[in-house]
Length: 97
Image (cartoon, rainbow, N blue to C red; front, side):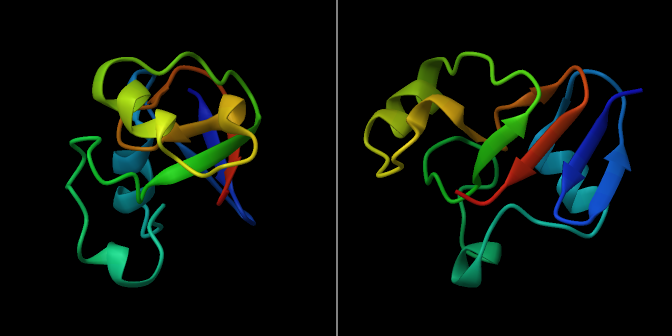
């Protein structure tokens, strides 16, 4: 099973699970501040669940995620994904961008 490492915590999940769901089910969140309560709920429209992939496959964003990330203000856009759209297929390490 793939693992997700976020800070000092590591979580196992089934392949193909959405990163946002894995985090939330384990008591973690990709959101900060008020976005923990006010976010799009996984529809790739708000961008508040953006994470930086520091180790593991980044993959290519598509659809709404690609559109949302085009207007993001991240210096290293090539390693940033929305947790609500990223499917965990193998071990991955993430951090807040």
